[in-house]
Length: 219
Image (cartoon, rainbow, N blue to C red; front, side, top):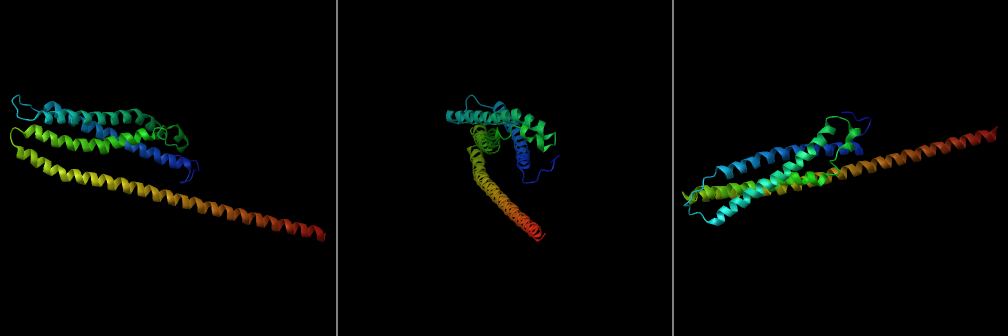
């Protein structure tokens, strides 16, 4: 990677880091969305519905709505990733910080975050709900105990998932805050050092000027 003398705290390098992070998020979103939406479609197509089933119609409606939302959310995340990722990859593959401004990752930041949230948070929550509803649709006519067992297992998993998501995002925000504070402190120290060197240089210049003036008077 060519930095051309840019420091680690330069705007170009920080933008390059954001570019790499956006690229990683889009790749993860596209893979996760394609995988989970495919599973949801297979589950909807392969489920066996009995014509004389005693299952409540509300359960079928919930299954249809959850499956549709799951596929729609992941397809939206996949579309955003598919549209933006080639433009980011084109800049990343050049390995030059000087070309980072040609990437649309700064301008399309909110779209990238939306795809990431839809794929990793909302999409996974819907997928857990899909599993619970699918167990009821599949086992309702045979054993309600099996359906209840699946729900009992999924409830703590759902709680742990939500707790981890909250903890992860809070930790991420806290980490970004501390990194920003450290960067501001480094800039302040650099500013004070530059000002001190400037004052020292002015002092030396005035001393030399005074010495030159004294020498001229003596002559």
